[in-house]
Amino acid sequence: MAETGALPRETTPGGADGSGPPRRSGILASLNRWLGRRHLATATALLVSAAVVAAVSLHVLLSVLGLYPVGPDVLFGAALITILIATPVVLYAQLIIRELVRSRQALRRMTDELAWALHKAEEGNRAKSTFLAAMSHELRTPLNAIIGFSDVMAGQRLGPLEDPRYRGYAADINASGTHLLEIINDILDIAKIESGQAVIEDDDTMPIAEVVEASMTIVEPMAVQAGVSLQALLPAVAVRLTGVERMIRQILINILSNAVKFTAAGGSVVLDVVPRYNGWLLVTVTDTGIGMSEDETRIALTPFGQIDGPLNRRHGGTGLGLPLARSMMELHGGHLTIVSAPGQGTTVELRFPPNRVSFERVSFDRANGPAEEAGAAVEPRRA
Ligand SMILES: Nc1ncnc2c1ncn2[C@@H]1O[C@H](COP(=O)(O)OP(=O)(O)OP(=O)(O)O)[C@@H](O)[C@H]1O
Ligand SMILES: [Mg+2]
Image (cartoon, rainbow, N blue to C red; front, side, top):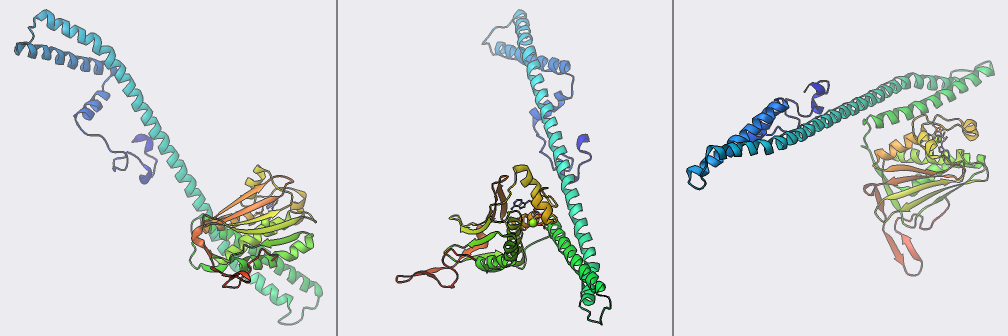
């Protein structure tokens, strides 16, 4: 097919390789194709002639059988009536059929073009992600040397540095190198997940309470410094999550630290773990901060996307935390959604699928109420 010549083989419908829709066979289909190649008037003349021959033959047959006496005037009349009726009918039918064929071809051409565009876009995205993954990998090696040697110098492990400014410079180099490495690791993680190279191999099953506790411990000092209250609510049953612990912890830290970062002093941040009746696990992080509009939410979810505001400028950051958290959630088969409005605060919803969620059995003691065999928290509590 000429119009699909530029397409890769696997996306060429109807090609000679038989990958497209099958060609119809049979006498009618062949006749249709043969007529389709003729000019409209010629095809009409041929079909009407065939109809006339058929009508005349029928009359002759009836006459031979003695059922219906036929003279030349009757045959002439039958031929004339057939021509008068068949010509507009055949012409109209042909016009409709040709229009249908044209629409089908246009539709197929559009489908091919769309498939081609999609193929190119996916190829471009994969190439970008592979390039990013390769670059990040190359950058990490020299950065590790910078971080390691500056650490040795700042700690004066091989002997004293005379001028204290040198020690300060070494510490600054170390801090900047570590910060850069964190960014590169984030980029590498996003690139790997987006290019489909990341798979969950070494997943463990962990109590959600422990991951929440670990994440809260890291974000707590930030919250104290910002004057924002931080609280975690856990369900009465012990919930276990199956996944990569490092990633689940990072998802929670990224979301919690955003909530604290974009909430002014006096505000609050609440993390709530809610098992759903359909087996999914919902974890929400709700803040009373500056909030975002729908457009801003879209920007926030793209890599390096940041919304320009006074709190943003004060805190810096690279704009990778949210997209990375979303990619990691999707890698676990889950979803990350944001419900927010300017000035109304933000709720980030994390949904983990049933195959990654399990509940520990709760035994019931008549005297003391429900108690968990594993001994984890049974009441909603402050973490
Ligand atoms: N809870 C929130 N409330 C209001 N705005 C938010 C919230 N979370 C994220 N944002 C907006 O989305 C942007 C992107 O967030 P993201 O976590 O990706 O990057 P960041 O926090 O700026 O930098 P970092 O890479 O250090 O996380 C933020 O800069 C901020 O503008
Ligand atoms: Mg962030």
